[in-house]
Image: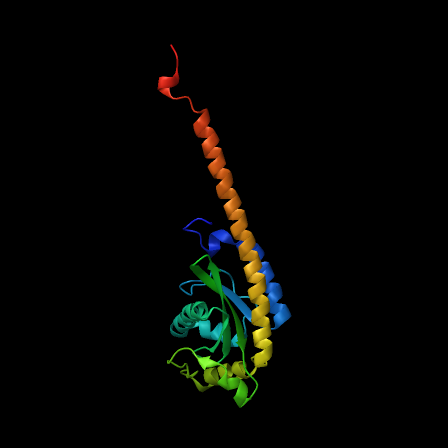
Length: 209
């Protein structure tokens, strides 16, 4: 078993994972970020959309983004599968939980896409939080620019979103399993070294005059 205090930052090779994350984002046409169990980012944001860049630069809406990430991860743990939902801005995001043993470490979040105008698809995705960001800004030009960025968000069918979620889940599980195996190998190695060191230590009462 991995160390009790293990977290995603210690288990993952973050620079390497970010490279994989970048490739996954490009291949799937989604934005991806990895967060801890509190919803705080531990990686950069791969392929983040212009719309979400603006939203996350605002201190108020950024807190809502973090809250969505945290709550979505917990909901994914409760359901035992990736959780597809609408964030506070009404766009689709997905939380893929990362669990080691019975400990929830965080989640890989992907999405920043819109569903095609399809009532059946919309019914399958629930809104996660009650507060809604209306994109209202002080100036009409700023609001207009933000709405324009919203309209440029990529559209994705619900079935495709689920397919991407399953793919990312498989990749994440494989990488985490490998990381935990390496961690356990190191713990075993350290335990053996400690045992050898203790056996080879000469105690004072064992020294013969």
